[in-house]
Image (cartoon, rainbow, N blue to C red):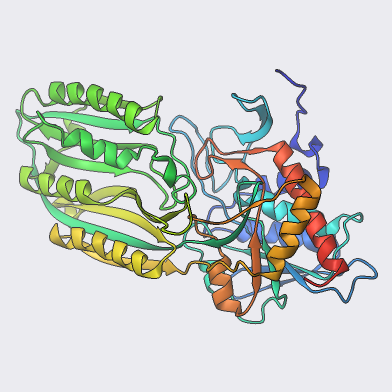
Length: 503
């Protein structure tokens, strides 16, 4: 059923939240380039009369005085991150370093529910809405709260390095509400840890023979999504689909000239492509298997919009390529890399314990054009430190066997659940009072900053919750308006309960 939609997100309820989010969305904020959003949030907070501190890394702490009469209540930290995943559809012209996000008020195709999405790009509701809710709660005169610290971290999406460099004492609260979750029926009390692995090959190239066919194979139309939050849905991975096509029976003598796919370690690859060469009949064989594999991808991964295109290209696109042998060894290695859910948690029903995302592949000429450098980036996750280490070593072993240089990169700890958390007791009780049902209390396979914050700041009681966001880390990202209303109501009620009595 069609419903009347406001034309500007600032007109949505709760208006303080959407007003702050509109301001955040207007500021470019890719990971590792948060200077402008830091300045915006600082200026916003100072205009509200709040003191702002910034550490050497660029994290912000906003000090918010208590509501009059509640000065002795426990100090509460409201925490979110300033950066966003920058993904766009292939046909979308957009510069994340310069342009504001273009929010669109729309309706969910299945339910008709009011949503906010972006025009062809990620929205940045992850975690812009969380930061907006914190600012709204801190500045609204009708919200009762004790002393607050709003902790805004940087670079969460590219390795959580902001949280990883927090200095003890930067914030003083002993109870933290993380506002970076994406399901309004859940209170999270734990998360997986994660770690990067990078494989790099520098392989000799050779001039292509004059009689070879040259073509481009491209995969597109996959759903993509969050490599932690959506990994259990068995969505397609464009890198693995591309390799499956190039490795299919009937395709022989292939030489790889270039390959690319994915863009972020924490996003499932939606698109990929390769330029390849082969003997007469190669492109016809590739077209045949591409049609078969597309049908299989639709069936196996529920990817109805999947597309695999094979088209000829000119020799100006590929003067040199890997040998047949090196091409085959590279494709074997990519086939062997694990992707998706690897283990389910033995004690928590439905929770992924361990996974890996074959996230990125890129290539470029090296050695004055005589070599091809191929780089593959993976992000592994696990709620068990030993299983995370074992998965990363498995990926490293595949790389070493195939002659790659291996880098075990940035890693971060998980967040150990505390079912006896006093803060959890308050949050559970408030949820039941507001919504007449119990929240689902569980851990999440995605990475949250809570584990790192706990490691950096010491003994701190933490809970995570937030509004319903669908398709985070992909251009399909959208947030449900009613869920923002629900989550903000919940946040303000929790703050009121904490101000009125001890946790």
